[in-house]
Structure formats: C-alpha cells, structure tokens
Length: 475
Image 1: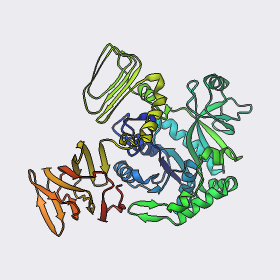
Image 2: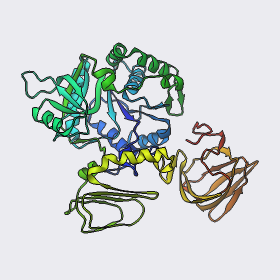
Image 3: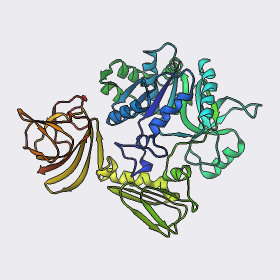
Image 4: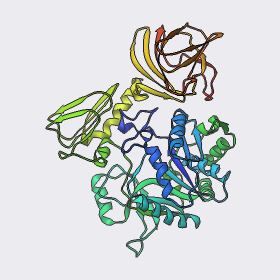
C-alpha cells in the first residue's frame, strides 16, 4: 500500500504579504477554490492503492491543517506535529516510523504541500512507475523535465547510459542551484532534471539508508516517535528528542549518499509556486498580459500581477510590476525582483513586527478574530465563534474586556455566573476575572470586543480549561 505523507512545514516567505508565518502559502487558495494543501491531497485520488493521507506540520498550523484536510479527505491518516522545524529528512524518518507502526511493508510517497501539478494522469503514471522501483528497494525521486534554464531549482543528473529516453534512471548526482549559463548547459544536455522534492520509497529501506548515513538523526527521530503522545487528532512528537535531532534535507542526508537512488522523469505542468512571478505565469492573463485579482481597476497597465484582498486598488501606467494588497500591508515590487521579497520579511522579523507572522484576521480552532483598531490602552476586535465551539476558560492580568453581540447567541461565563446574550446585548469582563465565551447555537456567533488596559498582548492569558489541548500561550 502507498502511504501518502504531505509535508506542510514551510512558511512561504516569498509570497508575503498573503503568506505569513502563521498562515503560509500552502493554506491559501492561490489558484483554485481549494488551498494548495487541499489540492495536494485531492490529486492523490488518481493513484491506485493509495491509503489515507497523513500530514506533518508544525504546532501553530495544526488546527488549520486538520480542518482543511477534513473538508477534502473522508478518512485522514493522522497529523504529526513537529515541535520545531528540522527540514525534510527527520520528517521523512518520523513518517516512515509512523507508517511501519500501522502497516505492513508500506511505501511512503512524500509530497510538499505547496506544489502545483496540472497533468494529474501524468503524475499518477509517474508514481506507478516509481512504485515498481521502490518495491524493488530503490529510493525514488521525481525529476521535473525542465522547460528552460532555471536558477531557482536544484538539479538531478540522471545516468542514462545508451538509452536517451527511459521511464527511470539511476541518479548520477544532485547539483546545487546553478547560475544561468550553467543551467542552460544542463538543459541543453538532456541529462538533467529539476529537483522536485517529491520522493517514493519503502519505509524500511529509507530507515536502513538513513541509519548508514546519519545514525544520530535516526536515533533522535526514533526517540521522538517512541515518546510521542496523542493529543486530540494529533500525534505530538517528544519535544526534547526532536529538538536534539540534526537538521538536514532528504537530499543531503540520504539521497546523495545512497547507491539506491533513482529518478523518474515527470512532465506534468509542475510548479513550486515559489514567487509572485510564478503566480503571474500560472494564472490566466488578460489581453495586456495582466493578472488581476479582487477589486482592481487599471489603465495602461501591462505584464503585471495586481491582487486586492480588502480595498479598491487602482493602477495607472505600470509595466511588469507586482502589487499585492492586504488589510495591513501592501507590496509593490518589480516582477524580476520578486525573489527579494524574502529580504523584506527578514527585516520585519528583525524588527519584531507582527506583519511577518499574522494577518489582521487570525484563525483559532474555535473560529477567528480580526483587529479593527488599536491605540494606547485600548483595542477593538471582531470575533467569530463557530457553532458549538468555545474559547478556553481563562483570565487576563492586564486588561478588561467589553463584549457586544452582533449576531447569534453567546453563552458567557463570568466568575461564578453564566448568562445568555443575544444580538444588541453586551457584558463586561473585569480585569482578572475568570471567563469563557461559547456558541451554543447553530449559526456563527459574531461580536465586537473592546479591550482596555495597560497591556493588550495576546500572551496575557492564563488558561484553566481548554477543549483543544492548548497551553497557556495562545495557539
């Protein structure tokens, strides 16, 4: 049986400001009505003998990942939580250990959550070919047939021998991202493929090869898995063991050191959506080669990508620009400089600015909240609580809260009292008072929260009871 495992640990900094650390690109619907994570899960339906979809992600994304998979998968195979990021090799090791604990002789199909594949039948056929080699003991990677010289990808050189076209070939070497001239030579030779980061192998064979190449890594992963604990629908790896694990990619840790690596060529309209220019290329363009998303008006604009999420964006006389508007940030970049967006995110992180981490609208397992206004000693939020959901039983040391119900019905605990509030009713939560907000109804509960106090940070919270298993810190 093929056990598909989606790797969903990235942050997608090059697609800021839509992609944020706590709401990255794989969780966004960038090309269709489904998110990229959901599209990755859905394309697995074309593969024969494919088991339930599992996912590896970080703790901050767990509820979003779980909900998105629930919407498209009838029987998810489980979600493994990494306490810290350790690249793809430890993630693959944990996935292999997890699969072997549940299935006999499983094949692991490892897929990044944020790729686009246009030709699903071609993808399924490549997986079928890869399965034959994986069952025979090979470690299979999928090499993308290049459409031109590309400096943003690593390359795989295949050992073709006398055959010029093969269904699969031994890997001769993995090479780093080249300069443009070198990339051109690679493509002209016909021996090189883009490194897709997708892999297929027997779980036991991968672990054997990892032990030969990096025994300390496998030991840390095994300890983290053996001491993992179940938490709701999640498997939470042991924190200390996983933190001690060396960080490395599958390529460096195993594939470059094994004699069992083979590459299956894949020509299926693949794209890793690594930049705004990639989204410009992937989307349908108008007669002036523009991609316009949302409330956008243009005059004499060409070759540009303009995306509005919140307000009217009007553009005049532009050529080859990227303009992306969100409620709290606007990006303007030359289309040939979009790789440098990552540097902007780095500066935001250095300055500890919230725009690197979150959108103004923040999702929680119970619903969402959105900042409306903030100034010295007060903050206003719009809160939505899903039907049947509840915030934790909590208190704050530095702020009081005023709640005004806009829509739906609220069951509110304030100290020792419980009260029901409906539209146009309100209540006050004094500083330091134990409280909880619940939605007992069948429609979303919407309210306006006005916070007042000396400190309004999200970390001013002590949880006494939480149905989602969260700690005192917000998650």
